[in-house]
Length: 454
View 1 (cartoon, rainbow, N blue to C red):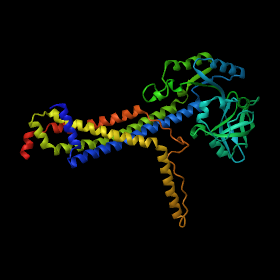
View 2 (tube, rainbow, N blue to C red; view 1 turned 60 degrees about the vertical axis):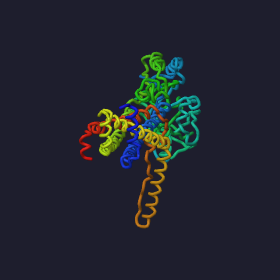
View 3 (spheres, helix red, strand yellow; view 1 turned 180 degrees about the vertical axis):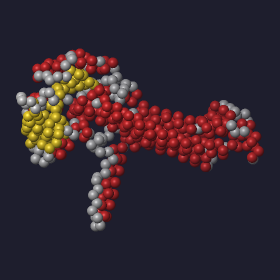
């Protein structure tokens, strides 16, 4: 039998006026499409969340490349190191920073904080920092020695805002041994947030010179933050060159040589880490979680493919008479089997197209969908509380799908067409493999046995 004839017979079995059998096949196509929707959504939402969180860490926390002093350095040594790094090819922006711990307290409360000493003019110079750091109130100003910019959660806990006084307790070594407390007063100039509370919940920004004065040199850490043009082209398993990650950078060897150049310029007094090395455990956790979710969603597609198999088995039973006639006219068992394999393949293609369309529609509107679900559930909770109020007192916490403490307040979505293609190909392959058993059964049909029953 010619291949064209095999193909048209498969299409006739799928879309012919067969009644029940066509309905079963179309139902299986619909189920394949619906099962692919969560897989597409997981892939795109997981990529968006990973990208959003990583970009915030890279631009506001760990920098693209970070050099950490191995010993306590004086101001002149740090200034000289900054000048050497600034001259390295490929380096766009260099920031000296000192970090240490302190106890911030106000009239309302107290809490431990991470003090980040940054130079005056840092906000204006670092475009990436400005992009991912939202100023909730006031302004980001470190132009005088008493200025402080506070993370939103710390500001809320301490009950402070722009213009309020903030006291910070630090310790310094005593000449007789032990430590002496030191209280420093600051005026809050602004309240900021990255939109990811786990990143900035303890941050308090103060002038670099003041930080070096109040922090113990042995307990604090001196950093040099380095920004380059293509940070995601640096070696990492999250954003590799090619495919879906091509949008982040070209992965050129020239960019990957920058950390080695920085290390060579600084010498043995500094340890140089890329953004991935600085938070390696966290990023591996992100990638592992995404892979696990993808595997679970893929299992759902496999379960849905069982409907393709069962529908084709029933189709083979109902078409036994036609199969017997085709074999009597010269069709081989392989031709009959190919009819059913092609039917499964076409059903997989249709299901994949349906699933991709539905998945992309949900993915690009995921923030609005989650907001609508939260509003609806909170409205139902409020209604239930109002109904129960005359009889009993009910305390209900506001419902959140994704807590801002552990996730982004808004998920950035960029469609990764390589992953979409891979998801569609996986669905088509699974549907095609599910048709193999029904195809072999149909191909093994014996015309004489069928004719005896009719």
